[in-house]
Image 1 (tube, helix red, strand yellow):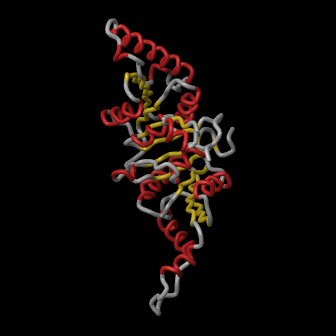
Image 2 (tube, one colour; image 1 turned 90 degrees about the vertical axis):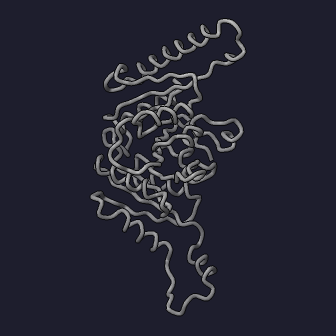
Image 3 (tube, one colour; image 1 turned 30 degrees about the vertical axis):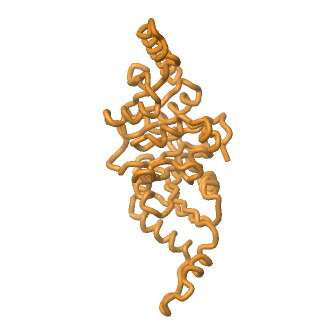
Length: 302
């Protein structure tokens, strides 16, 4: 059993905070999970460089009454104000120096965390996981599941949509999500393409019907391998000829999905930019909170 887990639930949760508004929703969700799981909440922030020297450069001629501040202590105070009085055990970790994602993952390991929670803004282009950003690096490098929070917290999750390509990575992501959230209703989504379908003159309908039947059969075999708690018949299987990232957005917009689950292969940012990554596109397109689970056989990207 993983030392960070008690049964199937984490004993500690790491909240990666940037002290900005985008972390507020992540804080609310992390607190709710800590309460439900009786877990310790570790709130971590990384201060890069020498903030005292940076402030001194900005304030070359400060007011006579100004006595200066220690940005690290200011961060500790803000985190304590934000996380206190929530009914959970809170550990504050304000670290100096980067890279930020590396320091955050070190804290997660030191504190025995089983889940990393981070927030990402949703205003226009800011909702995208920018290659190289802290959240992007956490998703790529963390051996722990990373929950990217997008929506406001109104209560426990109720239904999750697990994106799958029927691979072992998807099986691992499915089992991990079910272990964390065993009471949720489950839909498994699979988007597929039929190569050259647009170029077929005769027998196109038969070709598409065969592809659909094959995908459904693979989906049923996937569910049998995953062995969901209530059985394969209790899982909604959604198989469509559609881009997987588009399918996730369409489904989440039509049904009461509040958690998406994707398998991350831990590939490099350069690889994904050049060749594209289905998991990356799903993370960017997902309109709901998204749990990214890295394949344990994958090598974390740098």
